Length: 384
Ligand SMILES: Cc1ncc(COP(=O)(O)O)c(C=O)c1O
Image 1 (cartoon, rainbow, N blue to C red):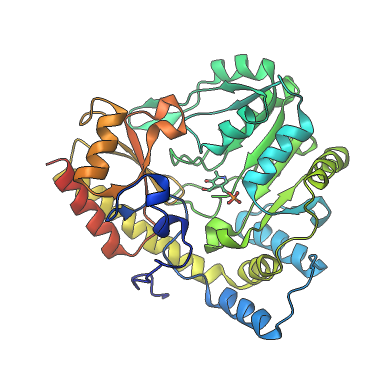
Image 2: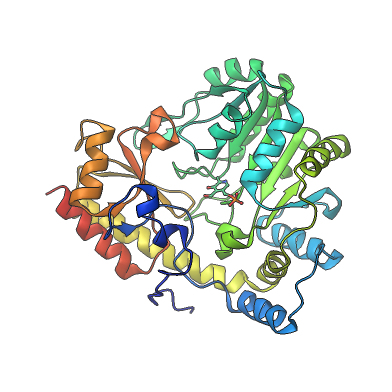
């Protein structure tokens, strides 16, 4: 069993999560559980691959070899039973980069693009910043869990050129069922809406839930599938993502747009890390999932016992917990003030994920258990 209890000091390492509080308007001394990376070391095989490369000592322009495509597609086939063709693969420096490319490649300024909020905030900004029109299909919180309002989705789909799906969903933690995914796919097909499926969290699924890749459904002719090893193996700083576009014309349109940015070759270390992770990281991931489940169990039982007014939206996937503080704070400002000034915690405040997120906050539990324990104790102090 990998030692996920190890406390590793990340300060002074250019860590976005741990080194930039002042620049982001936060006071010193906050326990940082916001941005979605993990306070764990990557799998030993990844570290060894990077060490090997560092020792080689030459860091020239690099492109993925065929073994890279094999490793990536092999991972999704083995773990999720999804056959992806390596020819569909377009490596990218990140999923958010790819989302922006999709918006630009497949829509024109003024066109409508659809998201389901509350959702990971770059979804909205990729649309708004590119001067497209944002359409939202608000997720509905019912009996402690989120569901899709399909009538509303259909109305919006009629107008949307492009639909960015978050699967599994950050921040509400839903792992969409096959039925839900098929229903979304059929609506997209009916109204000729391109689906951009962001499946970056696909490897984090708990209990009886099963992640269904959109590409395993019969909608591949109108799909961009975004994957990356960055969440799964904690490689975000290496800028590596794998975008699958089955349709040749759509793939060419994406590549043309991507070429306009001036990006051609990718980060060599990212390529090495990705290949090693997908080839050898499976057992490490199993240990990680068990550990994260333990962290989630701890949060659930602590809140139930000590802070029953903070409601945990039960996560089916991801390591990001969506907490409902609406019984304890009257406004977003009050919630933020309590979290920062009293609890001394840095969480992502819910309104960042869209107006539907107001009164909530997102807590990243991919940290050693002792850190999560401390965060919960701080939360208790904050709301005492
Ligand atoms: C749904 C989702 N997509 C994309 C990203 C970021 O991807 P990248 O770092 O590859 O741009 C995140 C990070 O939290 C995410 O949650």
